[in-house]
Length: 131
Image 1: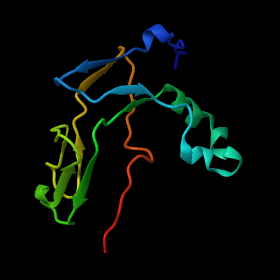
Image 2 (image 1 turned 30 degrees about the vertical axis):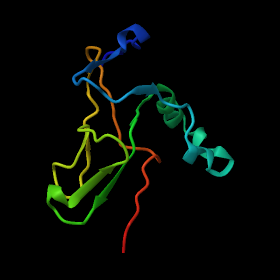
Image 3 (image 1 turned 90 degrees about the horizontal axis):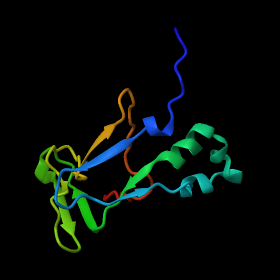
Image 4 (image 1 turned 90 degrees about the vertical axis):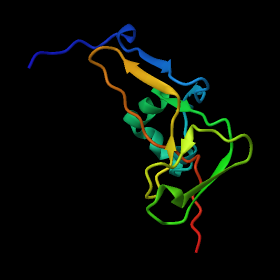
């Protein structure tokens, strides 16, 4: 196996193409996380890969408030979405089984031979379980 050169920042471009008229806003991710701050002596910051991931990430912001309630059924209609302001089609429940989908309004493309990693919400979503 031959050694691969370390890519320069110019080779690591992530382009976000808008595919809707009103995509969700993007912002550089914070360098710290509240859950990491709460660990004893901020111990989580001793994990270098986690710290690097924080510094390189982006947040997709949701500019509207809503409440989603799942009744436990498998049908897409099992999730009720109540918006506190103007409804948005960027949040939908069309798979069923309690899955809520966010259509963020972008198509992402990386540089050739590069990949991206995406993950779900951090601690910004509060789940309330009813009896």
